[in-house]
Length: 299
Image (cartoon, one colour):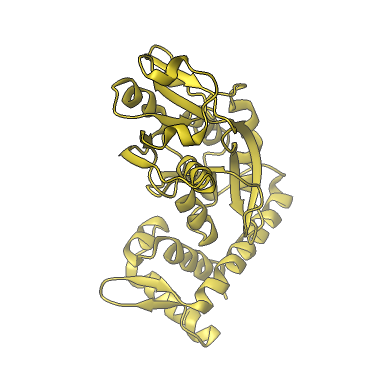
């Protein structure tokens, strides 16, 4: 089993496309395909299910992927011991994030990382499925690290490092009857219409669970993928929302109202798969996060 074979295998496993894998590894597609077939013959089992429309990992392929990454990381570590620790990082780093994230200055963070480690290719993506989608991508090794919202730090198969915690509260238009009230109980909101994120996003999951525990179903009339856009929709009178303090509330005619009992808090965290040891590139990226994190309780 050769290093280049493992590099081709990882590329195909992550891209699930031989053409993209060939482009990524600067090889021709026939070379990548031949290398994968040779690896499968060597191992005595298919690593991919192939059809004219899709490529998918087999059970053997899924088992090999973290081990292949570990093997390449060991080679990289061995080179580092010769070249000098922290020098000449190579490879790729796939980062997932949430739309509208301001607690982390992600553009500056990524720019600083690239300047320090130009040999590492950084790819970023925003999952349309929110935090649930990002966590699924980490488990299937399609991402190396992600910024996610969670209401518990005990997520199976995932290592989580908390960055900031947020306490959601009710957000209503300035002229809403509840704007001048004291703490509001969920039962007082039974006939209200809500603005929230789509299913799969932490804020939506948490709110749905809170109302379900109170024995209530709520009506979500506007779904947005970017939490920071919620105040404008609330201001326009399209509904109310249960959200954490948002920087984007400034300058809008909205009023925060406490809930009684308080809504379940949630945490913004850095997430990575617990099945694969962090590569040197990932460790270097994680080390930069604290210096690009805002000291604020606002999202």
